Image 1: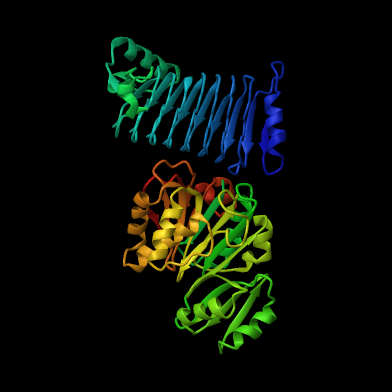
Image 2 (image 1 turned 60 degrees about the vertical axis):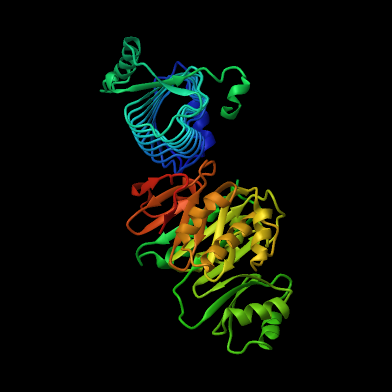
Length: 226
Length: 292
């Protein structure tokens, strides 16, 4: 079903997509002329497929649950923010805070993501095929941020238990983020993610980064790092 | 919040449409800044003539013409709502002094050989209509929609700020050390007409350029000297430069085609530009000066 944002209001289209329900047979939708509007496909909760033909604004596919959303263009700030499950694929580039606070599901960015990608992520898998901007995975708690390109400054600043995998170069690591050993278990886990998402990559080529766990509790010796 | 926009034409193809393009962009940014709006549009230079963009405040254009004619001969005046563009061969030093001492009831918005600059309170959608922005042609233009934070909603508090010939600045963000910088710039002779932080940044740029720095170096220096959040677009007679602070909280997106480069806070206000969907679209990196 084609939904044209030149003809229909965004709120109407979002309401329709948010209330598809389980019983309907028509589960494939196409959004035309997004023209950079904000909050397109926010809060979808049913197992449907949506394809957005063009560039979107802020918070596209935010809070997604179960839906599979593909954007054939670039996305603005906070794509798939607070996503719970499902899959969001961005064919172009993403602006800052992509996948912020995401609890689950997969966010795949085929281009670059800008600063603070995966900020405060809580279980989501984010795969960036290009590079990420500064302060990515800031305060990231759980999940995997997988970067096929390079990472800009202060990667993983104040990170908790999320894992970062980088194939390219890392400009610098943030406070309390260190390189960790890539053991067999990690390789197996990462290869499984690639296999599940149909991405042909070899986990052995990646380096792993995570928390040094020095900033978990307040210590006066670390005061300059907080 | 606040919204900033800029468009630079690489070819002559869209010169007649420049005002129309910018008008649509400001319209689209009304959501980010509903309090006031302003824009600077650069047209081809007239070698001998200077243009002075003046806000008449309470005065009518006829009253202004009568008053200014006592001091300046051979002038042409074009009225756009409560603004006039005064064209004369008279050099800035003299005209600025006349406006400063004899015509205190009006305010100079900007001057130069190619800049036309307008700003006023009100919703951007109304402001662009009032100044008939769509009717303008030119080579490049920048604009601003304001959500007032640190100073009042007035014409003086609106952007762009022009503190020197053919220069102007729009800003999304806020500066925290503007009072200190204002004080030191005042000591060096820079004049300020408002309490606004952006005017200080504009004054800072003009001051450095007057000392012989180029725009790119000046903006690089501002990374050290100006404390706060910002995305700047600084216009000159030849084009404009874009800079985001190193934290880069304030957004910016660039769309480039073979005919133009457009910059804006959000993509949605560029969606009406020709061939934008096939443009090269990217987010400018923090701490790097881009110029066109």
